[in-house]
Length: 287
Image 1 (spheres, rainbow, N blue to C red):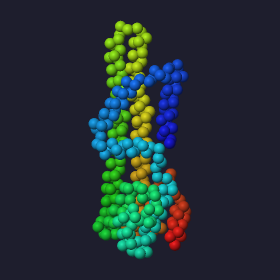
Image 2 (cartoon, rainbow, N blue to C red):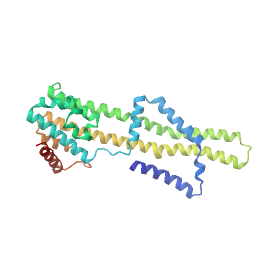
Image 3 (cartoon, rainbow, N blue to C red):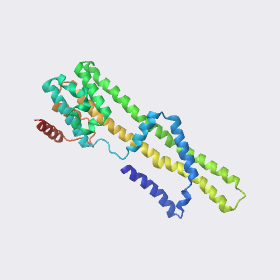
């Protein structure tokens, strides 16, 4: 929601200042300039972006109003790990098989909505637990294996923002293209009345204005917003990684939760007592 407010502030400040100085807002309404700049930017996207990346980009853009992982999400994640690893401690690692083989049918995992709705988090958790319980990966290499998984996912998530940033960089250039085409049209009417020439020159300059405004006022800030959300999501996965490392080292479930909690960003990190109380509550409900 804050991002949408920011867009309105940018638009309001620029157009409001223009009107304040005596400008007519309809003078900025140049459909041909919008077509040239917007169409060229869209064409650039289609030429340089694979379909799967384009779909991911659209999803990320539509998600700008959503917040990243909050304190409550981290508490949920820590309690989930505490509960799952408690099962392994009490009943043996073989008891985890029913939860990691079909996580969508797991009664425990489905209690934690933020986690179960994150397909990468579920796959990352289940694959790593499977590797630990089967002994397929030596303990000292588990950290590296998880980093490879996280780096691959993060790189994939960053690809759309890199492309979007390039589009933002190109928009002022497309604005100049629109302006030059406007000047070409103006030169064809150079023997016309001054008011006609002035109107055409003004329309041409709007192209430059729109390209610069779209780049620095909208697309570049949008790219920054998406990058920040991608990094926030990575923090969530790193918390999951820390918990899995603790489980692999044989820590008791309560310390696994504490070990994972320490790696959370201070802005959203729950306190020791908050996690302890949440884990105790989950244990009592199960009891």
